[in-house]
Image (cartoon, rainbow, N blue to C red; front, side, top):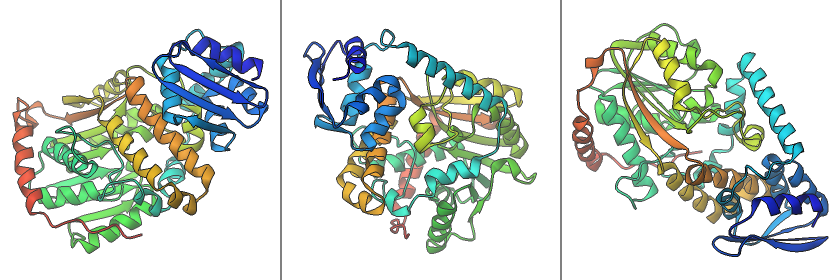
Length: 417
């Protein structure tokens, strides 16, 4: 093993067991108790690259097939690292690289360029067949709600839609705007359950095509329409309800002010908005270089301390905030297991490097919730305090009513791609 990687791992791995082998020898790190992982490198240069820049190169070396697991998998390795203390493991090169990424992130936020459609296309315009490998029957690509615990992924995604719809307090005849409409499942659920007219906007050509096709086949084209549209350039029109699920992570911290000013402009005076987003416990200095480069360019996970000032400056009121701490960890575990069970089909769509990239993405995302205190927040936003009831009992009451609706709802047809 190269001396640079040996020194780094000796500083990091104190508990658990990590066995490393390669062209220049092998060694085991840790006290031998707890989590156990065994890896093998195919070349010494791979070890040097990871030692110099583990935040990016660990993923790239694995994607290239130069890191092979003899025991455990990607999630086990990442969790083992996070089980240990990283603060004493920084090398001068890692410190300088981190400072550079912080400076780069600050410059990017100070000089924002609208690359929203390009960034969205990078991820969401992948083959629809890929998402069919691991999503539920309604193609919900956001955190499910495992209430009660132990339900299936599909049932948990139904519970998520039900929970959001209950908070939205939608009534028949109202106009609803969904900002970031995915593959159309939430919009169709709202239209059918609440008798509302829904406009869903997306920046993904592939999602737009699938959504329109689904609404047409379900006989909802007169009540649900989907548009290829950036929220910021919507014409000045009012909606009774706004909902956004899993889109806010793509807005970017530099755009929070204009996002909520736009919400204020579009939301009716008696309106209600529900914003569902990933959050983290404190502001992050820079994005994960792996996620930024390969998965979600331009993405940013907010802390509530960064969101609240923008809401308040827009003159909006927060009526309710709910924190869902572990539901996304369960969702991501389902997705990863389903994806890996069909990895050969994913490789046939793309290649083995792509499969390893997505495995790393799903594992690293899951670990953010199991080890780094990431969470989901659902924020209910209004202009008038009395637009929603004074206690939260109405949520459970409306959910019970929605369960009755679901029992009579026609089964979902398979997504056509």
